Image (cartoon, rainbow, N blue to C red):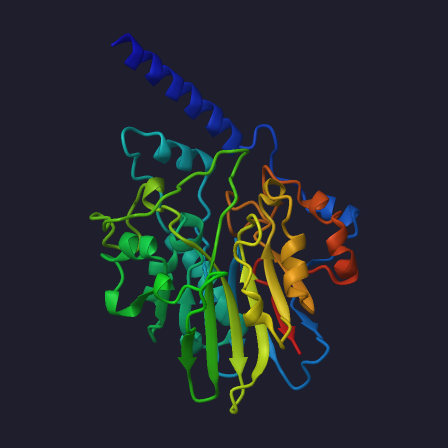
Length: 374
């Protein structure tokens, strides 16, 4: 009995320590002025960027924040990890450590989802252009708002998500509109046929590449594992859930190819929103043969836990342009001016030699900013 009580005390102390770390008492969110002092280009307005070798092409990409992206070419669009309901630190902590399996404390914020969707539609026009929603993994900051966003769309796209995410959401989203990414998963050893999207203009090929997710703090990674059953009380997009309901599942990066009428790649995008140990998440060399990546979107948070990140990714892709995403504090309210993520020295990230050749055009977007690549 004494041993059980001692273990209970240890877990309580552990919970307090982790909560303090998460709250950023040691390393809090940083001001944007720290980026400006280092001469890092921080884009707070819509920007047009010319890419060599892509004449005649036009791809519009809006950063929705926290790793989320809206990609549009011609009349079709893809939405990746839309998330606007930034949660308070203490709410996450009380959800995680509130009893055996946690308390139902977190939910999509209808006001913030509305703000995010209105901001998106004001720049891109009709959201009926969205033909697919991608989820890179199933943590709450990537998947929580997907059911609410899906419900707001008049024209329902297909949602591609991990098996874990499917199980979490199967009582709140029409399962006929969900596809499991593991069925298309490409690894370094195994190449599968891509997801193929088709509209009146073109075909789009999407390769979901098995990746990983770095720890959040030192050797601590929250919400690991795979959800194996449906969440019975998650039947409404705004229902309260437990933080532990949003288990990571498999993590994916994406190689997205826009094809012309002959099947030739017109524009190539790579997205890896979570830092990790290379070669995880990097496309197999065969996929990259003969066609460079035009734009790579790479996550920054927790980069310091992987010595090879992002340099090995940059070397493998040799992209014409890089946009650095998932850099801001996602515990801060979405409508407030962003700050850099707590627990990660974002300015120091840009001291790495492999980024030197991109120094003149470092792109770090403010949430809501649209890049137009030509």
